[in-house]
Length: 160
Image (cartoon, rainbow, N blue to C red):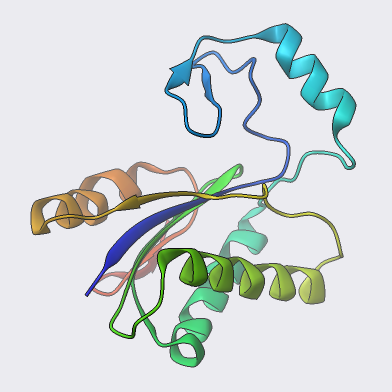
């Protein structure tokens, strides 16, 4: 069963002037670049998105509900005002691209319905394949719990 760790960044929040640097598709982490950040901001169609605590909870709820409809197993979710991590696996033959897109579509529909219509996420969320049990356990036991927002996993349920 493939298991992936998807990260959905809020629209306009992962800018090139971040102190910790930024990434460009297909490249390593780059040093902060204020000029590039200014160009990004000039091209933005909307204000940056922010995941409030209520939005974070709605996203976790939607991922749990969508799992039944889309046939995946949700292991854990970690949220933050600027991004959402999703640890998920599936048995059926489908690509990670299809699963990732299905999750994003479900999240977008839910947020547009419950709050207001807008661009909630960057166009292409990041993904990492979880290759072994120790990586899986680290994500659930250490990485996700260190986030500032709401979290959920199959053992603890919803927690902050």
